[in-house]
Amino acid sequence: MSIRITPLTDPDHGLSSRRLAWLATDSDAIPVGSAFLRLFTNSGQEHRAELDIRVHPSERRNRIGSRLLDAAVTTAREDGRRCVVAQTEAGSAGDRFLAAQGFRKVLALTYARLALAEANITALSEIVEQPHPGYRLESWDGMVPDGLARTFAASRRAMDDMPMDEADFGTVVWDVERVRAAAQVIEERGDLLHTVVAIDTSDNSIAAFTELVIPGKGKGEGLHYGTGVLPEHRGHGLGRWMKAESIRQAHRAHPDVDGLITDTADSNTYMRHINDSLGYVPTRKVLDYQLDL
Image (cartoon, rainbow, N blue to C red; front, side, top):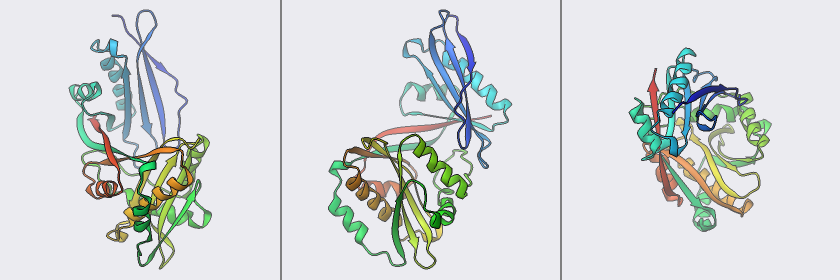
């Protein structure tokens, strides 16, 4: 089979990355596969590239995926990237393909779902109402309030030491401008960003946060983004406290949302325990693969 690989112009230049694309077509100019390569541009992650390859099931085993991979890896190497990462379902064709192409498995993630209509609101309320001396909860929708913006940006370092196993993730540097820009991206696509934070009452700084994105039409599945507790505030149950309140507020404000989805590294036993205790049920396993260049 004669296959042509054509580089495409991709307008998807985001807050912290730009993306390249390739299209594979057969001798009749029919698309049979594609590849997207995201090149991270934010400080601390300029060494990474993220790959997504798709080949039509009927066209697999014809080296289409390999040729798309070659084009993407060559570009990543020429751009000075240190590694290419890709994500796939455990046990899938992508899992087998990446392993055969020299990628190594660096991280396992478990996705879990809470059916919102079945959430135990009484139990959640008991968790939220338990006293946490020295802390209080606050929440907002959309952009962080001006009075909390600086301390909210500073609290993002809580994610710097999240378990990433062998993945060469790098670091993400947050400031007020970046926090606001990220919220604006979510708003512009029509979704709602809901944030719950734990505030240290001694100085009114944010000690921990959890974020939940609700679909714009208020239906479907909500998606948990980040949950982080600053190292100096760990050991007080803030993660479970905030997440319980986030669920409770979503249940009250968005009754048509079917469920809430979260993904957690298998090695993050602390957060997995929180999810289990709040009623989340594992649904699938996803693997991160990495090719070192």
